[in-house]
Length: 358
Image (cartoon, rainbow, N blue to C red; front, side, top):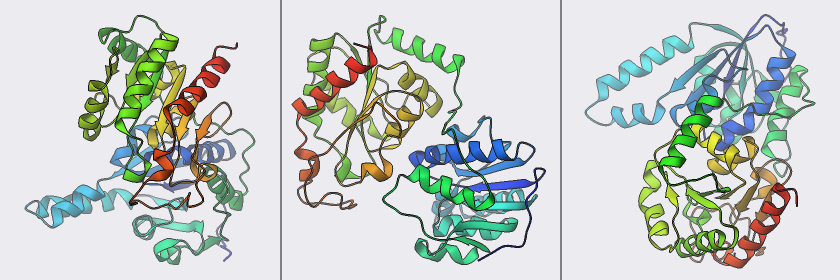
């Protein structure tokens, strides 16, 4: 479907990419490319709360609209109905206070389609035949892109439709000396004394992406014994109990900062780390975007689609014929259980050797 609206440098652009953390990170190179191509444009990004730290203060973005969708929906069915209605009403007015020349739906779901429909957008761009019939609100539909290519290339392909090419993929995650200094203070209070840092993000939203708790404990002990590194565990507030189990199963000293940092401080920590071990999660993508080499554990998902982007990373898979299945439930989770501690330790040795320049 061709759209008659012309684009100029002095225009209003609305980016709709609401979640999750990894998906928002994957969209950053496309938004940077839009900024480079349209330096005079006013770019607004509509995002949900969980990933908003990555968008706020980003140098390519002029304005951020934060949807509290989950909170509002929960409130509508409970005692906070009036408060939710007021929140939705206020947000809708804010969304519609600008007439957007270009709205880009990078999400391609019902929740993003609702936002695209609510916005005052002239040209509404997105992929055709997306899930949940979200494409019906678009007046400029791009043919489907090969899903077996990395998500970053999928988003860059979308903006090619408005004449934007990306020659230099960059993320520019918004953190700096303030976050580095504050992160360094947290580490020193936790016992760090300038040893090489290894960050471990053991959790994930899907149970099928998780590696066994005991293996994380054993691996962390072996890493400390073999390399003398300082191990830091990271995660959300909801991850604390599981990470406590990992730490309690260790014999060596480490630091657990789960639930104590925002995304900007995590990015600073990952940049300071010689290596980051992670399951397939937003933390994995944040570490890669911050420039840290990543050892990533993959089971039910496809690293060629959503693996750590860039050079110097190690992806470990069991290579079972049923993987990737993209299932959130599984009776055996054999694809993760068959990844051994020794395999991960060997990947660490290779990664640390590269990062030290040996």
